[in-house]
Every structure is written in structure tokens, then in C-alpha cells.
Amino acid sequence: MTTIERSLAALIVLAGLLVVGWLGVMHYGSTRYSAGYAAAVAEGKAARDAAAEINRITEADLRAQLRARDSAAHIKEQEHARDLAAAQRRVRAGTDRLRCPTGPVPAGATPGDRPATAALGVDGTGPDLVPEVAAEILADGADIARIVRQYDRVVERFEECRAVNEK
Image (cartoon, rainbow, N blue to C red):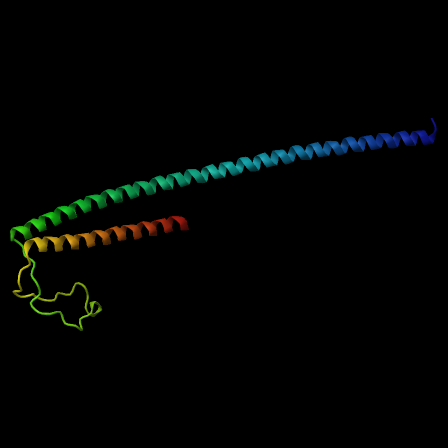
């Protein structure tokens, strides 16, 4: 074998070793990449599952609180209905009376002039309303109060939802 043949054989062996080394590095890199990808996916799934469990617990707590509040509101509404029915019975029986104001309401008296709880004083001895009409007025007032309470509950829930979403 001549020097050229030996050099050529050494180059072929070297090229073969380089190709085998390159394929080995590619296989090792591919394996490491796949393992890293699988680990990242597993870590992401674990984080997602943990966050989902925290969200389920938070949702269950909020649902329990809402059920308790709804139950309390329902009981309160029933109490208001009983009170209204009792007031209407007293008005119809003549035990309680609603009276018309004795004089005209001053034209300059706007709702913003005085606080809502300010007492206007005794109405005097104005004419009594017909008991059936007085009962209807009480029912209308109770309906308005019910609507206001429902609106307050909606606003309260909205604020709670906003607080939860800000977390």
C-alpha cells in the first residue's frame, strides 16, 4: 500500500467516523429535545391541573356562599311577604289606617332638599284612604322595596365577581 492509498483510507475512515459522530450527536440531541419537551408538557399539565383545582375550590366556596346568601335572602323575602300580608290585614280591618296629607305638598320641596329620614311631622287629621286602596298602596311599596333589594343583591354579586376576577 502506498502512502496515497493509506492517506485515502485514513480520510475515508475519518469521514466515516465524522458521519457516525454527527449521527450520534443528532440522535442524542433529538433524544434530549424530546425528553425536555415531554418534561415541559408534563410540567405545564401539572401547573394547569393545580390551577384548575384551585379554581374548582374557589368556585365551590363561592357557590356555597351564594347559596347561603340566597337562602338568607329567600327567608328575608318570606318575612317581608308575611309582614306585608299582616299590614294589609290590619289596614283592611281598620286597625291601621293610611291618611291623605292635610295640605298640598309645597312646590319648592325637592327630594334633595332634605334627608330621606327627616320626619315631616304629623299629617294631621286628613281623610282616611279606603282600606282596599291602602292595601294596594302597601303592596306597591312592597314591590318597589323588593325590586330595590334584588338590585342590591345583583350589584353585590357583580362586585364579588369583579373581586374574584382581579385576583
